[in-house]
Length: 124
Image 1 (cartoon, helix red, strand yellow):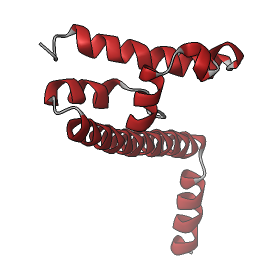
Image 2 (cartoon, one colour):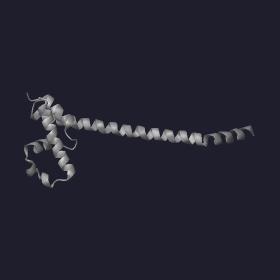
Image 3 (cartoon, rainbow, N blue to C red):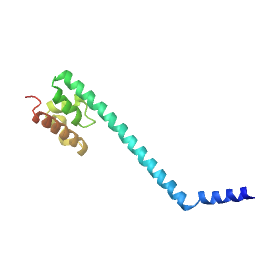
Image 4 (cartoon, rainbow, N blue to C red):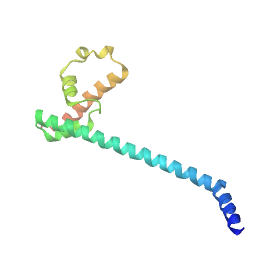
């Protein structure tokens, strides 16, 4: 009889709103942690892409500081080859007027990164 009573009391306690609230809070913390893990994975992948751009740049240009600047600052979706093409091709020849707003933003960001890295004096 005491065993049944203790089981019932334990069941009531475990199903009480206090435990449900703690469970919801725990689930929210787990979701947040999973989101942070995903963000860290994406950041690590972005760093790998940046290093690849930097290495390609060093093979082509030979200026480590400049290439590090490019690798760290170019938009993620812009490869080193695309960077070169964007920089050496006039905007009209790129089809800039007919681009979407996002495409124009990427072209403008690519040019701005080049200017930033050159302005820092990495070629002096």
